Image 1: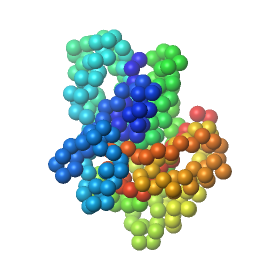
Image 2: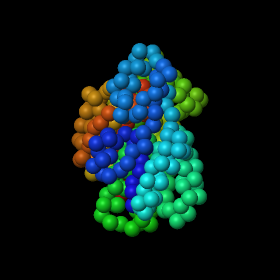
Image 3: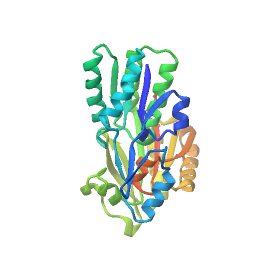
Image 4: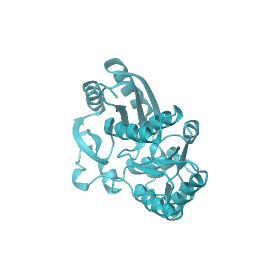
Length: 280
């Protein structure tokens, strides 16, 4: 089974190669120029563009790109598992569905499984990492698919952003949900629900947001591995990591930067925590 993902998993290209996952990159447009996610533009460059007052736009891989990559492995008689960025946040998954139907017209016996992760950033990344481990340990296709779907039910996204209005303007959050708090240093706590970004609480300052993230992780029995991503907020990410190590069952927490595509929609100052709930 060949694992295919898109660049919204926020796995580095090097890490994707290590786990034998092929990455379909999204595209970022700035001032009429197009850049391939992670290949032609970095997260730091995206964030600098935003600081310069520009608005990066992103576009999903078109169905033809999916067709090309699907056909490559179908011709090698490999089954395919594509785990995609949440359909509630992008049309990328829809492109994959169109492509699968196209490929099946020419190769009716092809085995192409598409799974909507209902996840974003390293929430998707952690699901992909587990999928890779199931493939490597030799699980049959049916078992792999069942385990991935179970993982999707248990992955938790908790994050905060500096500016909810930036998310709303980019269409990733309803304008009605973008409550104003910047004047009072109010920080939102958001999660992903049914594949969409949803503000759940608001707190005065980052310390209280981090305390609440830690409380939720403890309440939900988070243990073992967790992952934190950030957009130009490395020190804050380290602060959150230490709180989690001191107060929860999470004892293996990695930190990385949010990828270029996701950064285009969140802006700088974003910090997100991902873990699997108790017993998973």
